[in-house]
Length: 114
Length: 115
Image (cartoon, rainbow over all chains, first blue to last red; front, side, top):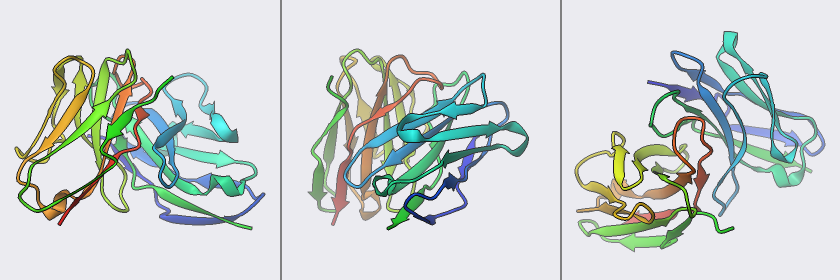
């Protein structure tokens, strides 16, 4: 069975600074990988996903993520954060060829300092 | 177009009662998922429908939980004899055709509180 680890429960970043949120996964083959964002009172919104091809994936809102097979990682990055980026971020893995739902990490709470 | 909608947005019930939570997926989406999100946790998979049938119900915690999707569109999650531990946000998602790479679109959730 697959699993996802997000080692950082909280991260505080100054507005305008760069951001990297860590995600490590466990899966027997190359998985499908996702990053979702959840703002207070909002549903989960997909930022980006990886399923094949170029290991650097571009998403919405200026986010990108890089799949590194050797490190079983899929870290999310943004070069310059905005106050509106404050939210909960979830990394998730989906099984190839399966009908299962996604397996999510516990999330990273991003706080933006002015 | 309209996204995934869930009703009610909040539900407060007493221990031992029966509750139903409703999900309206995006029109034309054949796959529908239910997840449960406890405080401070990521969503946890409960059940997946492909059309009218439950393709994977391995995430349902016990036989008090049941879900249906009789016409392949709207789904209802049913919880019998509710317990305080069932308190959580219940999320519904739909995708066009299912499968691991398909994007799942989430609803706003139903916050269930069992007193």
